[in-house]
Length: 272
Ligand code: A3P
Image (tube, rainbow, N blue to C red; front, side, top):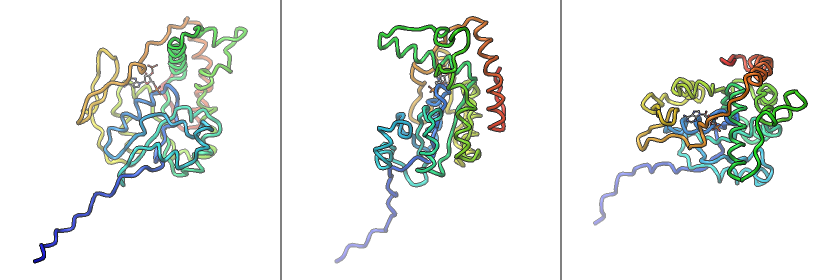
């Protein structure tokens, strides 16, 4: 006799690799790693584990869309995929490339007080050179040229947010770009992450229990059902102390560019 047929159960739809729905475009040293890790706490988000440099490195871009997709994590239907490459924000050719491949991408930009970001950028380069046993230069030497701030110094230029933002706004509507306040995210991550959830139309899920302050690290660390973790030791380094005159010079220098940035994005930040 025939055995009774089993009730049919819909198998879980298969997970697949897809183009990212969300791209964290920068800014370098703004807190991009913290942001992607915190976003990844949400069950409807899956994050690419490393920086892909797809749109800014020709050697990657020329490999094409299939290669890019192959670098993405598996996502179930309904989940959003996110990648972060902070170099995108300051790379002139990137906005057009993203618009062509992912016109509906939702873009996240995390910014930080520009002088602090510059110091963080310098500190990162300092450590990289140290690891490679390269000669160190003081920040003063790199910053100053014939008694004036050297606008060609990359770490300075990257903090001129309005210059770079203008390019993005030529190609993407302002409503597609969400700004995260990187200084606020350091002080208290939850309110910033709730705004990100809202922008992405995610079900509200990230909550206070996802964060705890670690006194030793001096930063918030992350907790989900599986584990507790702080960011890597390269995140949250001590910055060099600048001479007060130079610090003042930098703050004065950034004042006008900051106003232009605020005007461009239609909001202000609590920067000196
Ligand atoms: P510093 O190391 O200069 O303090 P990015 O990931 O874009 O490179 O940014 C690194 C910065 O993220 C760090 O710069 C740190 O200030 C900031 N950050 C924000 N939240 C953090 C957290 N919870 N733990 C460690 N660093 C955090």
